[in-house]
Length: 180
Image 1: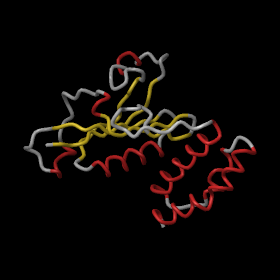
Image 2: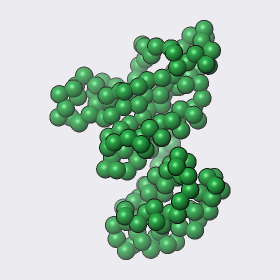
Image 3: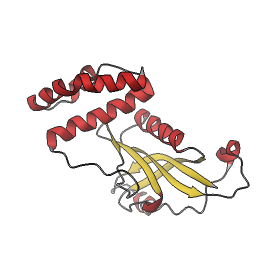
Image 4: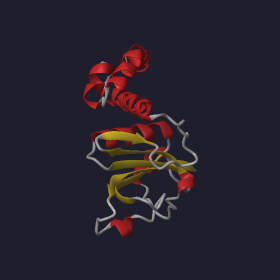
């Protein structure tokens, strides 16, 4: 049966004494100290739980959702009881990843080929794009708020403030549509 493995935890720094024991998974560039692993039948709910966990977590909190298969002997209601074992933890199975770094959410931080690739953005546009993504994640979890107020402490220069003025009404209209 096709299921989704939701792994939640904290990324270890390379200077952590436990880094080498936890760096053999996924991209082999991070130390994945997992705090929880659970099978989910539904990708959308796995992603929503992943986002909520990382949003509420400390810096370097992460979540990875990967596609896998388990025995057909289990009903959906029993998935939380199934012991996670014999998983590959490879990049090919990753369908979603998110981490919190420097207080900002980083969706798809693992850059799996199965995840949507982002277009290249210049520095100021990238800052606003990341703020907008984080804003939508926060709206989904915590409810709608004013985008301009939400961004104020994270703008770095006048060019970003001008871009915010251009997109504010559009971003709030999207948030109203999806989260009100």
